[in-house]
Image (cartoon, rainbow, N blue to C red; front, top):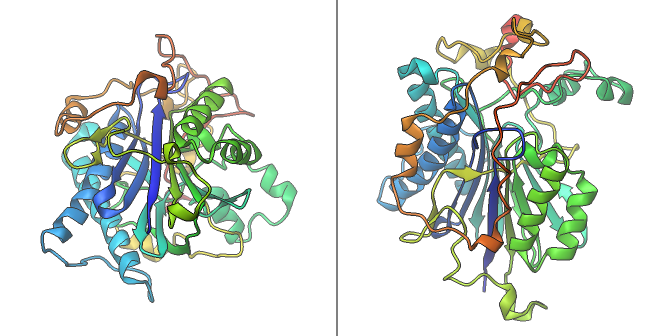
Length: 394
């Protein structure tokens, strides 16, 4: 018997006034997705919610008979790799067009990490710097590779030594995201699955603040209680400052569960519906989620090129090169000056289906109400947001 058991949790963190992360679990398709939105005026929240909706909508259309794959994929991709890549590109189109139609949403975008059940294997797809980790045999491994400016510089040979890498100030800037251009190239791969594997999908609200060895220890101690592990991850990130929204989705491979050393109580019962799940179709409300992953260093990926930029329609990037390190007239970085009050679009997106929530004990306690903090960028320690770089300005 093949079975995947999961748990998920999201939290606004200690510094943000709204949650721009989103996740969706569509068990009927074996699909698990986490998004981390970006953009001013809460448009990041719209982008992440819309992306989770549209990825699931692509799979529903296929279930209804539309088997078309309109988007290009990497040569040699398997059938399910092509399907997941097309679903992500479909979501990119929807977010991009919405941003073009509404000036308030222009420039909105989101990262995405996703897992698709492929029988005896798992298909992973991602764009941006959210991550997927795999815990196997007591060891943690990052299995996706960040689409970051840091990795782009390393691949280009501009950062060659450990000192160069450690001294690079803009490691959290990303070079790919959903919704910023009319074309995006997802990174898709197929990995094997073994009973007992635990996959962690998370936003950088976790991975930026909690070391890999700490994540490994938590999974080692709580691999049979995924809900508890999710709560611990949220608390750990908040204890370390909670500077961003935090979302974690855990997926455990319980194939041949009767042969594994797990008790019946360790498996998620059908009646337990985590926060955000629509009880009518086992699909989560796309208003919460986050996870991030990276590929093994031995795997090299072709990154952004001039040819890719030439394929895109005219669109204002989030920031140009000259934006890096600049401050607004009030001393705040322009990326952090935007208000976070969600527009009506978000409420409409969330209202499309009923949702059930976890019992209170399963959720991390919300932080006390606080005023929007004033964020000042220090020249030597700037907490820059994830943004898209337009290489034409390099």
